[in-house]
Amino acid sequence: MQKFDEQVYEYLKTIPKGTVVTYGMIAHAIGRPRAARQVGNALHRNPFPVVVPCHRVVNREGRLAPAFAFGGIEKQAELLRAEGVEVVNGYVEIEKYIWRNEQ
Image (cartoon, one colour):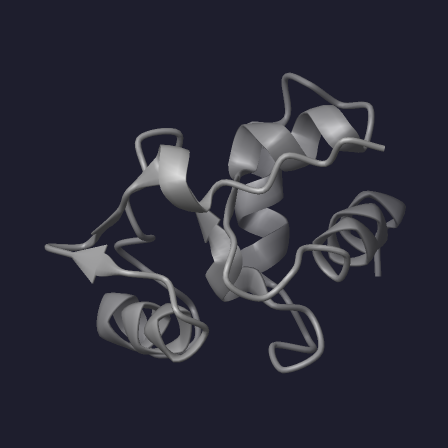
């Protein structure tokens, strides 16, 4: 596994249930602010979908992943709803559910 992927997965494990982050937020958090697309690629390769909660990642507008690697957009919506996140027409209200790491 690539070091970049490992950094993405480790960061994503810190995201609390019931919240979401964006690809760009992850890229910024791991010190690669221009690597949002690579974050998406790493999530698509996620070998541990139960341990690494990639379903908590949305785009900057709150849109779910159209090609969610582990069952499609409906599966991502189902996983988010199970955590209390409201999903409407494939979108999450970003300001309501975004996780702001205030460390």
